[in-house]
Image 1 (cartoon, rainbow over the protein chains, first blue to last red):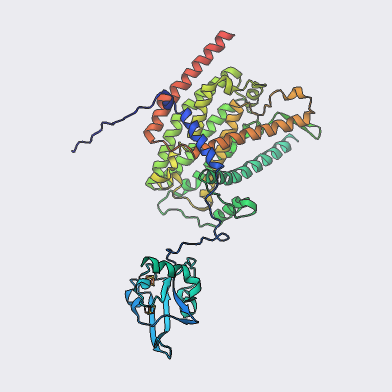
Image 2: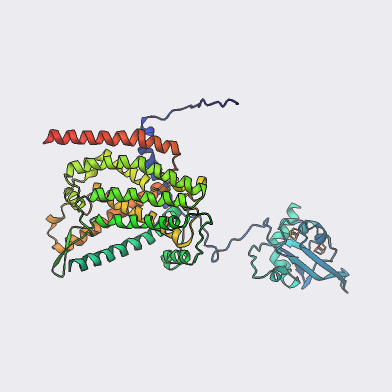
Length: 167
Length: 338
Ligand code: SF4
Ligand code: SF4
């Protein structure tokens, strides 16, 4: 049987009044009662929303520039995604970028908000937005197509600036 | 006619008690939230005032789960014992003196039992059966531990509770609660005559009602839920109700025994009509009880839970000798004064 060192080392012993407990309890109650009148930290959520900082990783979205997505359908994001949440189908276009995704879907039930797609993208076409309210009534609803993913560049300004600065 | 009056009194009492219990839960949640710099439930109704209704509705529509290997009769009986004891203890507590309504003198107490204090002591110790049986019948080790702890705790603290009451009885010279209140007219409240007795009694009350710092029977971090781990729905609700009803009763008893009950010092000398004197007395009683309850709530959110050995140490090595000494000193003083 291994020996347990049962010797308690106390640098300071309680004095008589502390051992009596009651004065200490009253002291404690003073603190708790004081706390009751301090300002509260609660945010009244649905009415009062949180505005996340630029470094926040919300749901990934596609950057929309001049009414078109920036994405060139290279498939890198879909390749890097650890949760296999992205599906891209490429096609040709008359624009200078020559390729575009006909189908771009992110399954939001699979996405883990890691931000790897954003890091992998050579065109800065997919970025993490500030949106954190994701609820669905069915699994089908959770698969976001291009209609839900496209977001105008202006609304993503914060994040794009952040990426330029820190990447 | 007397039966009818008693009946009305019972209904009114029960109504007030259940209503207060429901709102006490809300008050506790709000106060605890405020102490922790939160806001607490404020959604249902104006500022959350309908929250208790929502809680009760929720408890009622929940599925009633009984563990397969539970001993069903006792599993069912346990919450009933708890609630019956909690509610019936209240019967002997005097709310006020007498009130004259429709030309009839009504005593503001359901039952003026001539051994009122003994009745309270007896019933509160019956309450432990509810908890112990719930723990045993659930067939769950955590419940059982909770039940065992509860019985050990209540046995240890009942002694000092009874002994501290003896001091009061010695001074008042009666076991009837309304007489005890009458003995505390003016500022002769027993808290001033019996400070040590008050402290031992109050601490024991915390232990008897399973409130923090002595809530070992349901210590969440150790015992899951304690004795009510295996209870759901309304049965759980009954335990919850019993706990808070116990708390109200305990505060009422503390008020009656030590804080002068419904006595408002020297109110009879102010020259107010009798009816309003009675009303003020009732309000005095209610506000005193509320202060005690608030005190209990704030204590709960201030003091951490005792360890089991600390609890037993405190009970047997401190509370018991202290209350014994209190009895002896009180008796001596009374003997010398007379
Ligand atoms: S954030 Fe991560 S998990 Fe979500 S789509 Fe991008 S790479 Fe996949
Ligand atoms: S990595 Fe960028 S450009 Fe390539 S498919 Fe994904 S979003 Fe489009």
